[in-house]
Image (cartoon, rainbow, N blue to C red):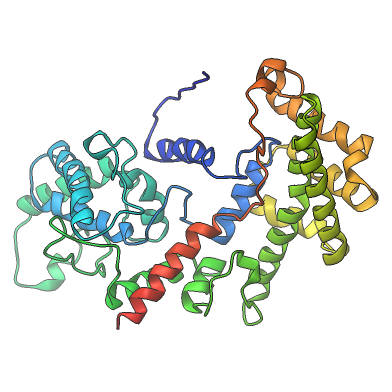
Length: 395
């Protein structure tokens, strides 16, 4: 059995590592061919603040409410942090008492929960401007420092004389917490909460697809973001989603071909037939949709590298060469150059662990590795938009 570890440097590093682990549970998102940096660049560009660790949107309200509750309890910053941690665990039975089961952090693990919601949602809280602190530790240090400063500062009846005082690290417009928060609560947003989150997300991520969708809620939430009616969306957003659509479809063929090569390596006729059929269907879709015919690849790479200038040169070369093969080849399944490209790419990024070069690694393959199409966290965003829609309907 394989295992790996990492140095827990800070909350951000911990969240990113947990996202990597969570990707192993998502069909199609295992990065067998080293295109994860491009996938993540598009995801962050379209839907900033989101994460594959997210479940339900109301957690971005639960957490600041619990932060405030812990800070109001007083004590040192370490004591406040421990109170907050206790509150996170108390939220589990509260949600269960409110009738929730799906999407509850710790519903199974309970007090043994290691992946706390504060880790999963901290990027959303800071990106969306709900909390202004790099970590829970920084938040409670700030709260303790602010309380000490207030104790040392003379009070005055003149409001202007108090205007220079630093503000708490929570958005002052945050809706009030329900009184029964740690007794029985649910994921259902109130109308006021949905309005607040829509405005906060749209303002903090202005110019993105996420902001536009918050301001222009779609009537239906399809299986892919690019299937939404975008005729009224800004050109930049339409172009970004068009790039995402084209890339998702085009690179999917490389994943299918990779699995075909593995099936041939172990000489499994059923899997060979299955992956060849999938490649035929994929090639037909490429041909019918003509998705690569007029793709402005220069603009595509400008878009990606503007978001993440550190996309490895090897990944860029692999993607460009794959797109060239798809455009030129009539039969990608038996194209020797395409096969060699995929084989070399796995060996380049995995070296001795590559399945196509290591029989022990190949023996652990169970099929369908990285087969699903990239959706750039749309399934998470769709859940958040559905929660907002339900909250608006509550009015």
